[in-house]
Length: 116
Image (cartoon, rainbow, N blue to C red; front, side, top):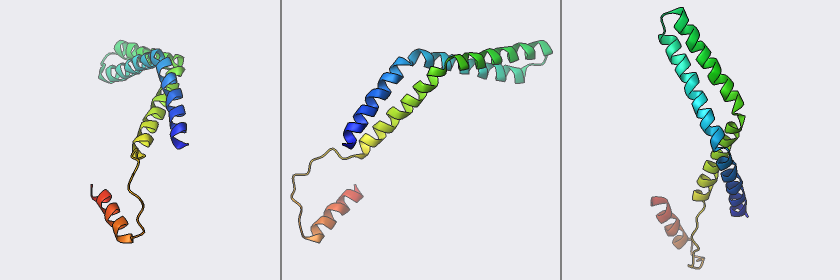
């Protein structure tokens, strides 16, 4: 049942991530504008250049607010990352060896799994 939940969550997260690719691109461009505005504001020497770079940073912040679905895309990508990590932690092998009542054989098998 856990695998079914992971499949459903992964499918929904994948659809949301693909649907918000445009917003993610807009969010990345707005982050670039904010970063450039801060960087060049700190490097600027004249008041006019500092005012210009503050304006660029504010435009970047406003475009980030306009791309709110991009934040949902980031959450969907994080959900996909969680699903992949959870899927890899579950063993996919079906053991055909019967369970032995001898505790030493079970110990040896578990010890071999730990030392791999």
